[in-house]
Amino acid sequence: MPTPDGPAHPRATPGHRRAAGPEDPVWRAIRTKRVIRRFEDRPLDAVHLDRILHAGRRAASSKNLQRWEFIVCVDRAHLRELGQVGHAAGHLAGAAAGIALVTPDPRQPGTPLSVMFDLGQAAANMMLAAWELGVGSVPATVYEHDLARRLLGYPETHHCEYLLSFGYPADPAELRAPPRAGGRRPIADIVHRERWGRRDGPT
Ligand SMILES: Cc1cc2nc3c(=O)[nH]c(=O)nc-3n(C[C@H](O)[C@H](O)[C@H](O)COP(=O)(O)O)c2cc1C
Image (spheres, rainbow, N blue to C red):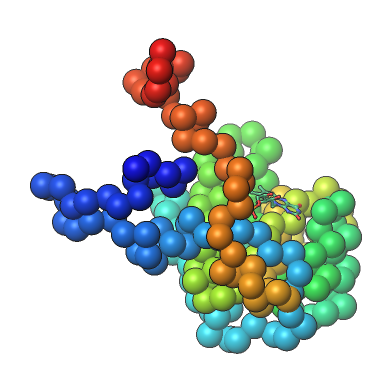
């Protein structure tokens, strides 16, 4: 019986090494992760922060260029200031750590769009690895670019479009909550077969 997340009990088929189970750790993290905006007031375990940074470092990138730098911020006063860089960035003020994702300026002539694709992969790695450790996260989009540059000190050649807040959820039940009903578009709405407009289902 199909579910919004795919077949409920997928079976191993010839050519597959094994069945895809609902508790496979990568799949479980992808399926259950949600953003967390309220955090406990305690620092991240150093091992957890280290894992998160390495998860970003491990991301694939176009031509393996790895055009990212991560500025780790844990000072409470600094985090409060960073909470001002965007209209929805206030969660940084209460985070255990904020990580600014810095790239070469993507608007410079000749900079391929892949820089932001790559950064998204690094960010997703970080947030998924964090989730597995019981660490919640949420992006903050930068709108006040001059303020972000002043607070973080990256050079004119570089750009910060996003920071990520990390911390242990204020409400640990959020880590175990089932995926929100209607939280994502149905698969039939987003998948086309071979060509745009050819969808599954009754015609
Ligand atoms: C590129 C990007 C930018 C985002 N910027 C913000 C932000 O500035 N502030 C915020 O609170 N959430 C931000 N979010 C979080 C989204 O609102 C969140 O992922 C979405 O509502 C889905 O939430 P869920 O994963 O818990 O279902 C951002 C997410 C992405 C992917």
